[in-house]
Length: 224
Image 1 (spheres, rainbow, N blue to C red):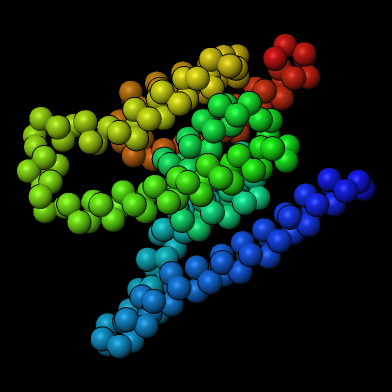
Image 2: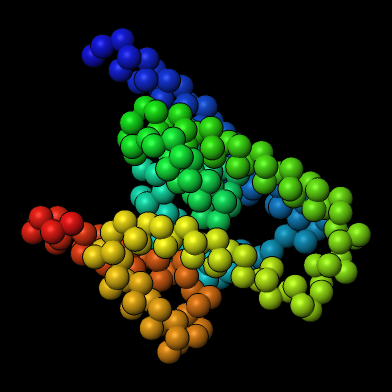
């Protein structure tokens, strides 16, 4: 192991120590604070109700959480993954920011340069998101007439689809053979079963699996 590789390994080990500590702290705060407030005000849920509610949510979000980790961690790298999963808004903020930064910098996934780029871009995204939220809270009352305007409301409701439509098209164009069938099937499904539009997190699992299968078959046939 040369000096550069040792430095990178030490750097990543430091990120893992810090990231794991912050992840555990975040989980304790997320779970602990509601229970503390519930205990103080005497509004604790009964065990049966809590378990029933948890299972309904877990059925959807536990599989999705595993899939998102497997898909997003290679994109974001070590530092970017910890920042993204701690601060949230992974799909709609952190991933587009990191992918765009990679394209601008011209870095390759898995390289040390890419680790630096994704970590910095994800951190900047987290800071900007926090500042925007603070500004939104401060300006919430003055901006209410604008935010509730009937003309502008449809635009606000379609910000995320527009963002991912523009971002996705660029990557679909890079691998049209892989993207064509999954995109077509998901589009037809959402057209004929409109209720599935609100289940994009669930649809991501079979869609991603299908894209991986198609990519693997094309790779084996050397047709990518």
